[in-house]
Image 1 (cartoon, helix red, strand yellow):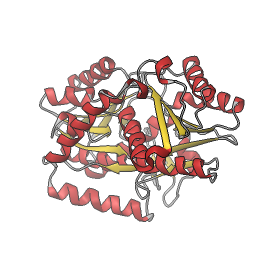
Image 2 (tube, rainbow, N blue to C red):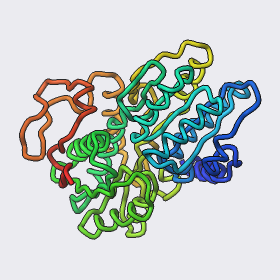
Image 3 (cartoon, rainbow, N blue to C red):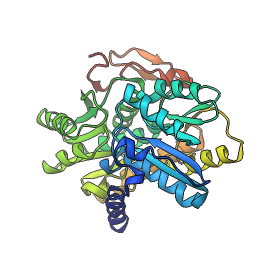
Length: 368
């Protein structure tokens, strides 16, 4: 495990030092290319060096490059704000002859569709949205499954029975993750609560740290998050307390105080979709894979997690992977104790994708 974490740190340092073609300014990255390789572009909300969300997308890009070799040529633009800037960058990639464009943040959904309508011969894939067109697909993973498992670890670790959760925006994706995490917490510790603080940003190391510190000051002794950097985990470590990682195996960058991480694994998906676009078999779709597909994962456990907790978590993981049970199968109650998913009921994906309420055990509000 220690060796793997050292490797992750070295990979992170390598990503930060990538050549200008792979990143740099928006104008530098969206460069005209001259060879005959299939050209694939990525639009990033943060930087690969965030060690979180963008790091994992770029790790997926590099995996596709390794798998497909000189058949493809890739480029990316980092730190692209959601809104008009995203539209401009996506359009520039299309204008410069890129064959396929991946846009990797929720707020890129409408800009992606706008440019896709202008360039019907270009293939677009948008991450975490819900809209499609003839040449636009969307993709995401059931990260809530990994969230649930990591919540079980958090519930077993807290002594104050208060777990802090740093949330980005109160949208269904984030709310669903908080709820799944909380259901996992209550599985191992029915007395615990999950206290939520919103930052209203995906990527802001300063705000993420400040929110984590506020939660720690309020009595939380374990910190979880839906943010893009390791700052909440570092804040917990500095207090001698625990955290749960997200996006990457954050123990590789912070240490054993990160008890476990809910992770992404985009490489196989990116490779498969690029190959499909290259050979003409690509079709628009709404993809939402889970633990069984491998697009979402659970990291190795910290040595601080007991063997009994590991066995319990892995048994639940096996149950989810088998398809015999999923996190939001009823009964599920909301904060006020009202049953929102009846016993024996299996919610439709549409209901999960539109989730706008907190479950029992969450302290906070989805309204700001």
